[in-house]
Image 1 (tube, rainbow, N blue to C red):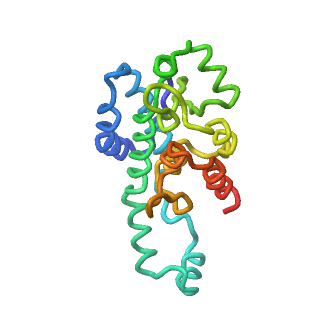
Image 2 (cartoon, one colour):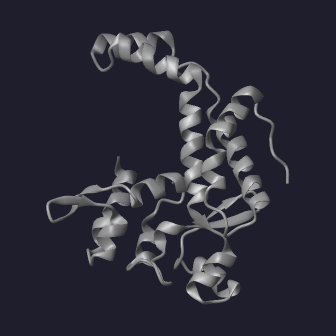
Image 3 (cartoon, rainbow, N blue to C red):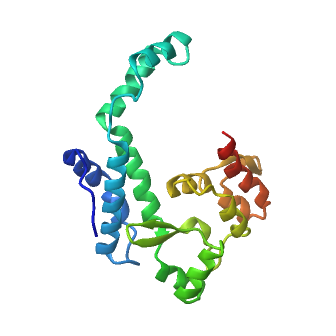
Length: 214
């Protein structure tokens, strides 16, 4: 397995130390070495993608934002400091670590759904399961499965509505965060709980479709 070396190893190490426990905490069910290898792939990807490079704007652009009132000088300075300090990299790494930790291997999906791994692969190819790749492996987020074996109602429709370029961490965030358009008993529900409670799948697909329009 080839892992690119981050341009700032000390930041990578700090990120790893801050988040590796998230990965390790879950895994009686998988080999720890394989899981850590997957996490290192995510870490390298995260640091390479998001290595801080200032605010990403020119001085003129920053000045225009402040003068227009869209952003105060204090908020701009705070944002730049957080980027320079690497906190956004750490948060991104933590989110991706949670996504990895909260997912299943093909073997685990096979056991959960009482089907062989070939059938798991076919269901994924047909759009009946959602997955993502890490290195040379494939993972299946646990939000799509229900206790006792089975998948969420309307899962195939949801999988079809997920933009292909959307990161699995974003998908997980949507599916596990209460949405204002999904309410029961006066409270907002996550799309997962909404579907488990018999809610219509169109409310969920509308959230993903809205990300394309935004």
